[in-house]
Structure formats: C-alpha cells, structure tokens
Length: 167
Image (cartoon, rainbow, N blue to C red):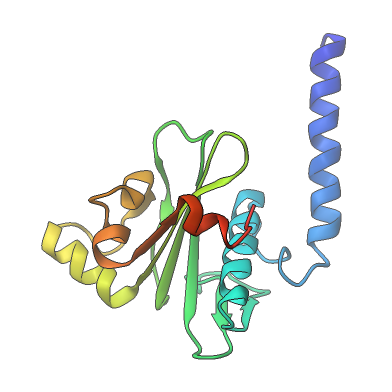
C-alpha cells in the first residue's frame, strides 16, 4: 500500500474509533450499529428536542422498528438518512412499529439539505393511493416535491431547516 493510501485509511479508522468511543457512552449517539444511522438519530433527536418533545434514543433497537421515543406523547420515531455518497437513492426498509417517520437527506458538504416528517397513518394512506408497498425502502425521492413526505407530511429545507441548526 502506498503512503498516501495508508495515511487516508488510518485517518478514517482513527476517526471512526474516536466516534465510536464517544458515541458508545453518549445518550444520543449510542444506539445504532451503523454510524450514519447514529448521526441521523442525533439529527432527529435535535429537531425533536427543539420542538419540546422530550426525545430519548433507545439503547436496544433490535427489531423495534423505531429509534426514538418522545416523552411528551410517546411517539415512536423511526429515522432514515440518506447521504450524498448513496448514488442509487435508496436505503434500508421502513418497517415495524413506528408512529412517526423522519427522513433526512445529507448533502455533499455534510449538511442536512432536506428533512421530512410524516405520521404512519399519512404514510400508509399515501402509499395506498400510489399503489405501493407499506414497507418500502427509504428513498431520496420521498423528499422531493411530489414525494410522500411532501404530500402527506412536512419537508423542511432551506431557511426553514437552517433555523434548527442541525448539522
């Protein structure tokens, strides 16, 4: 391995270790085994906290289908995030026992460019209207102008999103 390649690999691995060392003991970053997922949960937690909903990231998320529970109304929040690195525009499956879904698109400069919120009832109604599965994969298209978050929920972007100072 040439020196530059070795240096880049080691820098990445050290940063990953630093993230995990901190994240594993942090009440917000501790849950998910996927680092991008943990960051998505931290972004969603920040939004929910600013809305006064008393979010708590679950410690054990195995098969629950949701990542955060809100103390104010006991909403079960599932969080999905897609990054600019994802060239296919699709991530993991949306499934199980959530009551509210937060979808996040992270841009090339590690900034949240879109954040969508939708209830399970509205999500299922929109999926049925479109003749689509009730447990699809999360896609970038869901946050677009005719996407499910826009037609059945709320998409934050631009100045409205910047007010939350998420990432």
